[in-house]
Length: 529
Image 1 (cartoon, rainbow, N blue to C red):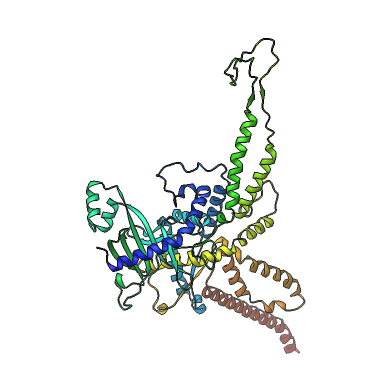
Image 2: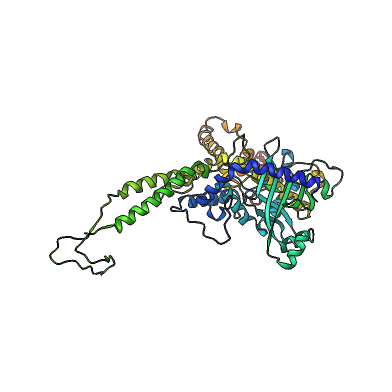
């Protein structure tokens, strides 16, 4: 019997299905031409089946993979830092003990990312983001690696936003084998229990719902009173279990989004017409090339003994004395004109996926400065994407990871003075640093102008060199372990001042002794008089 709670959830699920219906045909076309291995939205294909029957030109596939790989390398590269932690209160960031605690927490988070499946799953998320415009990744704790990440297929998820435009509700319809369902839910239903014994590999449909909990007691910390409810049920409405999350466990970024839409749009949406046209043109050009290379033949209606053999070394017999010959049919195909049109469409697709900006020009000689400027311009073009990804992907990802590790005791205990303080996230990935590179150029240009003029006037008095160095270190992402703390710098300056004072005293004593030595003969001479 279906409970009122299950009926309410199924009603919400039905409404979300209707709202998502118009997107599915778009996703299917984009999947067919840009990401065939994930093209299972409106048409379901068996696992391992061929997925490239519609593909005659793979420009869009390569462009999508290049952009996804570039975002991965510029935002969440495993080989370089891409975020750091700091307190919102600026006065706390000058405390050495606070900085050491934040740095230790950051290092532990990086280690947890490295030990988990984060890198492979985040790449799948970028691919979904670049092609379908919306990605979805589930973050949960794991007994083995502390964290486990799972990128969900776009066909599985149904989402809804809150009043702030933030996704806070995910309905996920998915398949699971009876064996896995039994291990996860036990003998929750007779069907699961029976299939576990008779056919453990048969797959069943399930629904996982995560949404804000409407009625809860904030003074209790058990699963059924956490801010977000988590409900598993069968597709026919049988409840399997209810729990909760302290934070929203899904990360749902959108590449670009209209204010009146929930799902996002991607570069693939922008150039879908070019992609389809290019594939159709390539198919036509292949047929034209076949006819040009192996053209149809004009054969007289008599005088030749059929069949005509067109294989190398083939012999064809004809009546002696006949002037009739076998001739190719000239179709007048203009192959260069067709190739030019194809290249125009390829160029349009590459521009939509930022390929021209992401790849350096081949066989072009550039100075090191020009290379740096090209890299900076390339990353600035992705600034609008960076802003949305920081708010919808990186921030909830880092918040959720930090909270899981802190609750599990994987992070060091914070000093008592930090209780209740809010932690802020600073993004230090190559893409984030490139957005602030203009500040570095402005400062260097200002110093180039001020330094020569300071020889004539004390203009350097206007420059706070300590703040200048700190700002440069922050923008350029210099590792904190190679930068001395404020306390160490102050100690070094005090020692230097003491050494200078001691040297000045020694010099003064030496000068006094020298003056005394010069005055002694004069005193003696005066005494002799």
